[in-house]
Image (cartoon, rainbow, N blue to C red):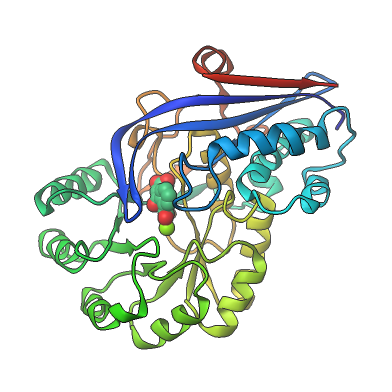
Length: 370
Ligand code: OSB
Ligand code: MG
């Protein structure tokens, strides 16, 4: 693939509803998108999931925009790239910035898949026709508001609910969900808001029959998670702690959790995600695909990875209308029967990117040509 051009866009996207986690509230996102073009004119698209601020990760959208222009795009433009896998090797001497790297790797995977006439799911080992999905519900200002939202999402057809928790918003809201909605598939995500000092408090979750408790402790604290995991009967799932396959191996050896969520942005690209999924059964880890409030472009890669045979839980991949008034792909992602999204069979992403819309609404644009 001879890459003759790269384009970057920063696109403001307003969320339909603000999303609150233990580290703050997101009302809107500035999404960094990459488009690459091959000499035949064929294109590929990718998305960085970096946030506005260094909360979930140190990486921010402004940093990624800089790193993409100064270090990553120059590795591609004017170069002959054999496959998306080659970019993993080429970019490995740039330290960190997994989300920026994931964006270009996605664009290369999309391009490679289009040129080979296959779907990105095919390139990533996806085998399922439909993937099981759930919805992630942010912290609300009252239990009534939470119950209303949970009710609405169940009515829409989501059969697995995840709620964000933090100290002061955990046992009571979860108990009231159980009381009002019975034995639904329910799990909680702490985004690292607790310490081992909360052990006694967290023990109360064990009576609630949760599918899992996601990332209770600091992202660096695999040892702490291994202690907590032995004390709680609720399965622990790791999110922020898993930055590459090596972290998953250590977590498995230490017994830091029974489950991991795989996010292509967090692990440096969909190919590292596939590697982790390929290894998860051998490590004795359950797996599913996490989300980062992606647009339809990033969402395509979540769906493709969720089609991998190792994914055994509902993934955090909701329909476009859970996030956006207007998504930037056609057709938008739609929830289908039995809480699923369909895995497209078409070439590349399998959905059409609305390039004119992106060109019109972008607040920053940059391009590099060979
Ligand atoms: O921890 O899983 C998380 C969104 C932003 C940052 C971190 C997380 C999340 C979600 C949203 O839970 C899942 C989604 O995209 O629907
Ligand atoms: Mg999480």
